[in-house]
Picture 1 (cartoon, chains in turn purple, yellow):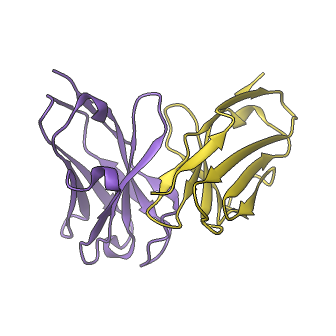
Picture 2 (tube, rainbow over the protein chains, first blue to last red):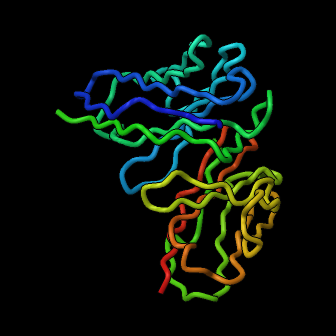
Length: 123
Length: 106
């Protein structure tokens, strides 16, 4: 069955960087785009970025351009989100989610989400 | 960036009530709007895509409509399990979500 398994919670100091992984299984890794969504405590959803695992290209929300980067490892079917220059406002749950479209980005996030990774930024 | 504005920000309604949530885009997004439902501590669940298409497995009491800048999600008969927050999302350009409408059951 399709699964997206994220890495564990992180605690970082302001100014530091964080790497979060999203290991996928149960389907063809290169056939579906992967998205990242952020949710601060008690707040709404915020789209961060997406990657085409086939070629490795990525797009970013303007707010995260230059501070976020996505990479992938096709041998382990894993996508990584790197977020730099962390501030307290970055304290949030980060989710990876699979696009609903086969080999195309629809930006519709249907049934397959990771469990979330809590990133806490605190002095 | 396209901004999505949801209203109301919260509401309280009784089981069986008809409830309508609205979402307005800062520019036309055609019908590239989706609706999600999120319960506390859970990941969002897709309800409606393409403004009005019901996602497989979603109860028929949920319906969506709209095009251009104005969209709505209607729950025809509110059920106890419908508590939580509802989000609209535009996918006309790089996606963005509305701020959410929190639904409480009286």
